[in-house]
Length: 423
Image (cartoon, rainbow, N blue to C red; front, side, top):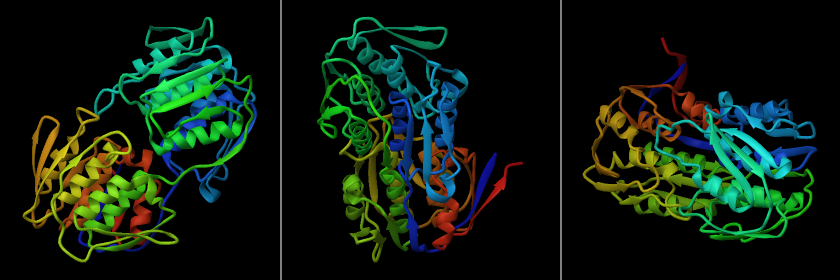
């Protein structure tokens, strides 16, 4: 396994290019199953999770052309040869987003076998809402020997209300409904921009969808879909992470291709904390010309403050000298593991249930810390950038799942980070 060794105390200045969104690319890749033929996806980040989804599609019989992924951010997927309806445990266990194959396989073949996802470090991510949605579309669903089995019985449109807001649940059922005859209405839907990006590609392929981006989505089933090309939206969580990087180092960064409309809640909180952000013709500029201020943060489904930015915000608020902030996590029950590592660096954080009281300190110091999940990894790198002396972040394979060449991008802006093998 790799680790990152970070020499702290260097101000970031320059430009960082924002990559395509992982959380948009993965459902779009799964959606290619719906339409046999050659699909072309542009602005795809070269990430471990993208590789895993390619491996899953290849396991099903597709061909994934990754030859231009590094140079041109282009991914070709030919789903003509997809015949297998089984997504095996060996792949699903490494990435929970593999569950997104369930809806497309069911829609295309009338049956699907997808391994039940394993555990997750940040808390439970139940898939019962996915299964309920498929049942209401007419599927017979069972869970046996660790696999989800979905078999089409009598397809019929339905009105489906999600008990809680679920992004992957909304995406999975929306994809399944595109080939279900009649009209399906989804209520209490996730409104994330990534859901909208998926819907836009489905529309290009010939689907009939209304309301994506609201809590009510209406899908009228069609007989077939056709392969198309699509450009993946910029990654709003990567954008938010680098906004914090600029702020935590007192730097001045231009984030090229960043879309501010997808990140309004984060930008508003950073403004409240004393960070300056302005939209330019090229993206977003972030800088700080004064002291940071404490703010209260409460995570919520979109358009609220994203849970995927909570850890990064905690790193920043740890350095609000004399300021007190309260962070309330409402999405996942175990998403404060990074707080324990930040404490090792000198942060003053007190945990009580789903709340973290952060009392800012003047400085934090480098330490050996361990990443527990993707966004926790990012928060520890951010803390290392601002810390005195050297920080070592271990288990950065988490980071590689969702951030494309993070150390290279930061180093180009003035950071001093090197990658090494853990002993």
